[in-house]
Amino acid sequence: MTTANKITVFRILLVPFFAVHLLYYFRNGEDINFWLACGAFFIAAVCDGVDGYVARRFNQRSELGAILDPLADKFLLVSALVLLTLDFEDRRGLAQVPLWLVGTVLGRDFILISGTVLIYYLHGKVQVCPHIISKVATVLQMICVGWVLLPMPAHWLTYWYIAAAAATAVSGLIYLAEGMRQLSASPASSPQSKPTDPPHGR
Image (cartoon, rainbow, N blue to C red; front, side, top):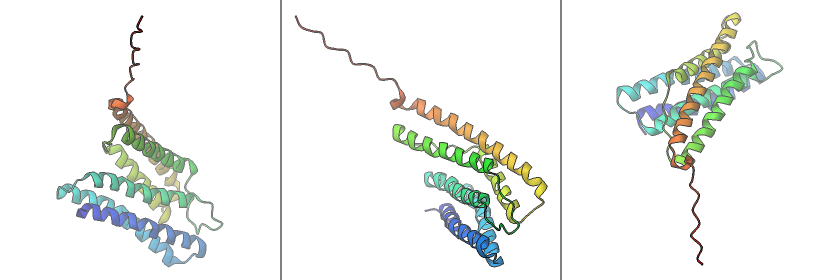
């Protein structure tokens, strides 16, 4: 457990804290719950950059970190987007995230997780190759959530939603192509030759 990975685990632990306080805010409208939820989200968002910097600066890149880092992003953003999509009776002035954005994010993540499991099952190892467009998608999703929480001028939200959905879809296609390449390289994906029957005796 390197320092970078410990920061990533801390980010994961902030997710239920954020979700619970946001739900409490929707239920009772207490400002303390809102600010605790906002604090947890923005601390986790900042730590996303911090653990990456620590890993690069002190040469702490690891296979565990390559798996935990995107998982921490997914746990935080999926929980935030889903909660901000729910149709609460009183949203306390917070905008509602559109279903098509959440559907794009969940669809991509479902394909990635399914592909990862399949590649690991067939190949025995998964090569995690982060792409810059994936980080762009993560940042845009964080901007969307932060924009709703603060809240910022609503007329910009649609543009942020579209940009986040487009980057998410493109990153999903890139990872899908990479997954197909890894599957093609697996011996298990090669066609099996049909065994020839032994010659019949007379």
